[in-house]
Image 1: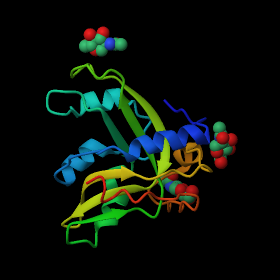
Image 2: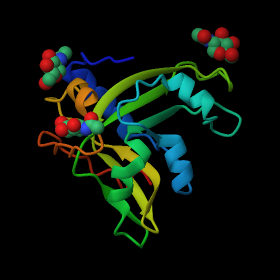
Image 3: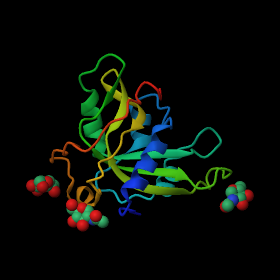
Image 4: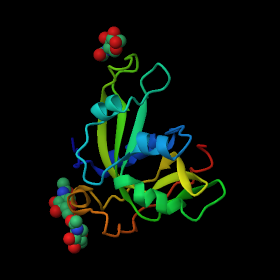
Length: 176
Ligand SMILES: *[C@@H]1O[C@H](CO)[C@@H](O)[C@H](O)[C@H]1NC(C)=O
Ligand SMILES: *[C@@H]1O[C@H](CO)[C@@H](O)[C@H](O)[C@H]1NC(C)=O
Ligand SMILES: *[C@@H]1O[C@H](CO)[C@@H](O)[C@H](O)[C@H]1NC(C)=O
């Protein structure tokens, strides 16, 4: 499931694709967790998770979906924990993310097959009532991180490293 040998070029291409995407239309914490959160070291198959959780766009397959590896959404919830008003925030830390892209645009649920990539990047989310409700965008992952070491060692008591090599896009407003 891991394609960790991405060249910097392909990482950048992938991220630019991500940047022009509205990633989700969640309405509340529970749908956010359902659509976007898996446990930290989960070795996920996007196709299976999307089918099991019945994630779709109406009667169609969702074109793409990103899963944040963050057990019970603890780190994501922490990002919003002080924000009573609706506000977009970007994480200072990077998280392991599994991004799935629909393979065949004419496929219909439950036959949605996804190609997946693991990246390591910042997330831009919308918080409302101190809870995450929308995943807006992902920011450029560090070209220095290949994600594999994070996947092996991450656990909830560990602090996530900052991402010094990440230049973030100003996409939060553009992609509302
Ligand atoms: C895509 O899905 C449609 C509808 O299920 C199917 O007819 C078509 O053969 C598929 N194309 C590919 C390349 O798998
Ligand atoms: C990924 O990073 C780990 C730890 O930094 C390193 O040991 C490993 O060789 C790297 N893998 C690739 C494919 O760059
Ligand atoms: C979590 O990671 C820390 C630091 O690497 C380690 O000391 C601790 O034992 C780990 N905890 C679990 C439950 O794996």
